[in-house]
Image (cartoon, rainbow, N blue to C red; front, top):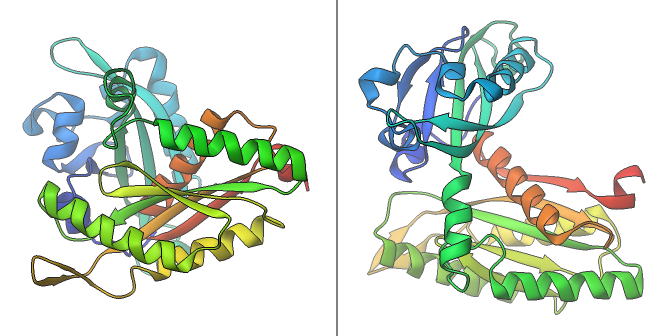
Amino acid sequence: MNLAVPRLLLDAADVPTCTLDPDGRITSLNPAFSRLCGRATGELVGAHAASLCTEADQPEVLTALITLLGHHAPVAHAEVSLRSVTGTSRRVRLVMGAEHLGDGAGSARIDSIVVVGRDLTADRRRDASEPGSESGATLCPDLSQTLAAARRETLETGRPYALIELGLTGPALEAADLRMAAALLVDRMRQQLRSNDTVVRHHQGACAVVATRLGDVQDAAGVCYRLLSTAMEPVEVRGEQVDLGLVAGIAVDDGSTDPEDVVATARHLEAEAMADGGGFRVRALGALAQA
């Protein structure tokens, strides 16, 4: 897998990232990944990825590695508990992608494996402590209410809805500048969307769009294209032109799926898009998955 988003961008964005050799041992990592593991960098380099997890979760990591090394999929995932040196653990999602020598993804030889981590424990802790905060709630009040309304409308009309989770990429910015840049992009989004689409800000530097009265999955992709196009031009932050990017995960549902599962699917797909270098990923849920 050739990452279109440079590793430097993930480091600058403070995204937990490490690189494994084909045997699954850590060859490099950024400070964010070290913090995620609760271990010093020197302790992690050379360690096998599975050894960082609780014993019950080690097969998850090994299965993901086998998936990549066997060329069964370009990206693999594992949801595991990482153990810190103090004995505490935190639940994380690891997205793994293989980097190939020579001819890229068509090459049979895997040179290394890139791992991007997400702290699920921190997400859930923010859920409990800041139910109204934009900075971390998985289902903040606005998102929860908007999804509930979309689900009711879908059940009444028989027309599917979609949750589009958007993640911001680009240079590292101070928190205030990041909020400003995200707000400018959101303003652009609102000018591009239909009357049936609602933008919801719910965590720092990112947002979600709930689109209703869709015809099919392709309609959701069309909405997403318009969203991604809003980042084609730079935004002005404190007099400076800043080039930002967007990645997206789209979950399209017929109203039969629990909203929390819709959110989890969209975020999972957003993480895939981020690890795979950009663009968007889409998945149909409920009866739409069998269509």
